[in-house]
Each structure stands twice: as C-alpha cells, then as structure tokens.
Length: 272
View 1 (cartoon, one colour):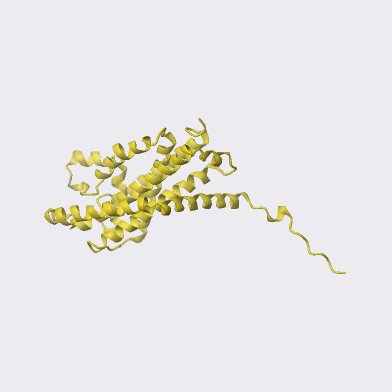
View 2: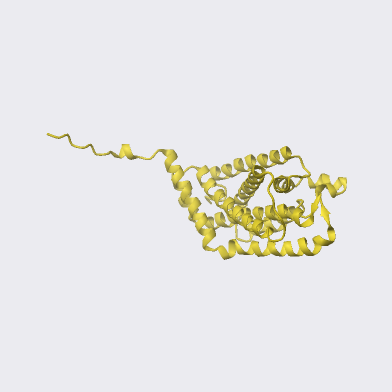
C-alpha cells in the first residue's frame, strides 16, 4: 500500500517577514515607475526640452564668448552641472508630488495601517524619485553628447555621486510632502530654495573663480559638493576634494533618512 503524498501546510509555505517586506517594497516601486511612464509627457519630456535650450543658449551662444572654464571648454564644463541639476530637480519633484498626492487622496492611510514597516514605505517612494532622476539625467546626458564629446574617466564616481544626490533630494522632497498642507506648498521650496541653490551651486561657473568671501558662502551650499563630485567623474577634475564631497552627501543622507523615519513614526501630517 503506497504512502500518501504529504500536503504542504500553510506554515511550510508562509512568507518570512523580510520576503513580505520586499514584495511590498517592489509594489510601491512598480507603482511609482508606472506613474512616471504613464505621464511621460510631463515627467520626462519637459526637462529634456529645457536642458536642450540651456545647451543651445549657454553652451553654444554664450559659451563661445566665455572661452574656457576650469581648464575645459565652457560647453564641457556645464554638462555635469546641467545633468546634476536635472537629476536633483526631478528626484525632488517626483516624491514631493507623489507622496503629497497619496496624502491628499488619503490612500497613504492604507500604507500606514498595513503591517509593512516605515522603512519600506520610505524606501519605495525614494526609489521612485531616484529612478525618475536617473531617467531624466540619462536623457540630458544623451542630449549633451549631441553638442560635445562626453567621456567618463571615473565611472564609479559618476554613478555613486549621482545616486547619492538623487537619494538626498528624494528624501528632502519626502520631508516637504509630509509638511505640505496644500498643493501650493510643495512648490514653495523648489521655487524659493532649491532653484537658487542649484543656480548658485557651481553649475555655470567654477567656485575657485569667485572672490574669497563668495567662495566661503558658496561652500555652505550642499549642491556645490554634488556638482563637484559629478564633475570629477565626468571630466576627471573638480575644485573640491572628492572626500569632502562624499562626506557631505553621506551626512545629508543619514540625517534625512533619520528625519523621514522619525516623521513617519510620529505620524506628522499623516494622522491628522
């Protein structure tokens, strides 16, 4: 008489907490990517058009009169800054609008009452912001290749610096979305804080070309370190020591991760 085949019990097929968290994380990321691609005409095309105009106006027309900057042609010099600027703005804008939209539509409450930990919620939204930033950055870099030769002497520095910058500003966008009370609030920081910091972050000029007092003020701008590290990766040279740039980016990452998780844990702006 044959022995009956044992039937798998629910305990044997149950997922571990980590497996469940990874599935939840992947679900949030897929939703964010679908959102980016579904409205690609708003998320990917406008930055490409804007940066093309920057290359035409600043790179070709004005750059030909400026000459060299930092030992490179002006067109080559502004490529890393414009790519980084597009990454920062889109990483920030994606998560601030997406998470505030979840708050406004009140479906963020479904995430908060679910058993997934806060790091999964934060990680999913941040991954969406990083992915959009990298998508736009890749498009802008491809456009730059139409105007000048782009070489990448330090690919690891290039990739790590742009990833850290995207993470930092995705986290900053998350904090903005938590505190925002209406849609107008998510536009205040990009307009009055992010845009000035970006334009004064060494995108269009070399920091060492400024007077001493202006250099000191500029070094208080975190975007300067991100642009400098990315410029080192693309051009092989930068005005700020690479170790200092990474220390600043990692410091902001740790601080913003702690703040974001703290806000989720306390339910600031989420449970009212």
